[in-house]
Length: 199
Image (tube, rainbow, N blue to C red; front, side):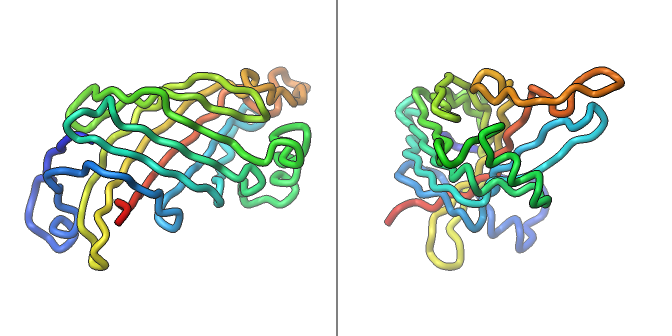
């Protein structure tokens, strides 16, 4: 999208490999092998359970001169949720939560992009989960741009989205004897994205 500041400090091999490029305008495809879409939620009021979606596709058009002309789309295979516990993952795939047999995909489509700081963008869009669509806004930071050793122009972004799952009809819960509920309504989705400019 816009230009960003080069990393400060010495010119180590790492810094040289991730130096900023002057213009990242173009069409991009998300590199699934180097991207993480994480999720976390409070469990039993005392701890945080973390997981990730492992199957997804994404595309973006970045416009460095006019960030508002940029756009992003993401399709997530809801059944790919992985929290490291087979029983919990099966429950998340069931009708109590994502109901992946009926609603196999989680979809995000941007409706607007706004540059709010040198490296920070607010991406507004429609998020569809279980067939319900709500508008959300995600803050993304451009973390780097580089020409990799294979000739690919790459950009990196990090972002996070806090939401209430009840707004998408993800309402299953269980009461605790000590008060409160088993699963928090508020969850966070975390994005660590690497994207490659299309040839």
